[in-house]
Length: 527
Image (cartoon, rainbow, N blue to C red):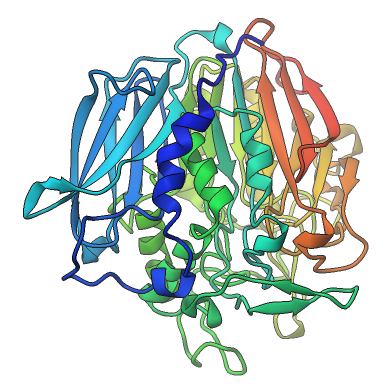
């Protein structure tokens, strides 16, 4: 694979690390910024880039007070003759966050950027610059593409444990020098408390960095904002964000475990009785739009999270939202279900965009798996959370929508599709084949699962035979809620060779060790 080397990574990150050195007292830093403060604006939360294309990218920052965002870019890390971009005024309305769109960038090149925060009343007074870098998507096929994916961060009470290196998996991902990171959802656990310590099986304690917002479930907008800020207390994540652009989707824990539209919370929970999940979702979506650089939702809490990310002639990533438009969790055995897990509008969008795509590879980024049974055991009901419901026969419930999509891919002869997901807190590879399936009107395809990033690991669940899955590889603990200190943290890598067009998937452990490899050939409808 022809892939541009990563120049001067350590020096590129110097400014980011220097600016983040102030994060020594998380509870104090997590407090709302005061409007009257001495000194200069600071960007202690680091920088991020997102939705990077062949000629553009979004840059994100958060200030500790009102400030004007300024971005400078350069072809070199010396920032000789920089290009300047004037961004928005950051204020309390966006929790002092903001993004700036960089346009007219050269394709397939390393872009060095630095963010300056200026005093709104005196533009000459700026804080220390915070630096980052990203590589624009290639215009030519031969440059190749490499990206990593995973999900599930700070779940089940396992937060930032500095004694084990914090979110150390991000350092392992950064070493691969990926073009971008696909986060498959559960960026926060708004429904989970992070205590100062949790007991481990050997009698020792897992010790967390804590904040006030993580001492209770998230209900208010301030709570949700504090959940997103919590993760940025981790130095490894800030280093990663300064080096690798993000493609972000969401799932349930950004709001509450297994939530669906129209759900109302009953009694006996940490939430006030009668809490409407739609209200919580709106608050979470606003915080989500503030804390990630996503062009379709930036500054628009009602904006779409589902979208297609074009990354040159080799790759399109179809980022799904399997949460916002779904029907209610149920036994999922309906013989007709037009709403499904995607909603009709999103399904038609996906079919239309898949049909239009001319990329060699079409990655369908799903925030939930297709054939793994994920129960929703609320109040003892036999409800299901994902697509599968354990009945190996003809498609029912949400499976009907997936069957429609798979049939469409087959009959439209759409080549180069594969599915990536997280959610289930283990890593595995499933091959789906109509010869093993009850539903047969589709071509064979692969689904790869990876995660968690820093959360409890769980045993692998059962497979549903409707689409004929074969679990070719799996690594999962035998016990539930295994801590990050004990391992079982995973990410995946996708490497597309620019010369041959071959795509290689590698499932990796948190230190980067390769557990499983699968190579796929381009130009095929099924494989």
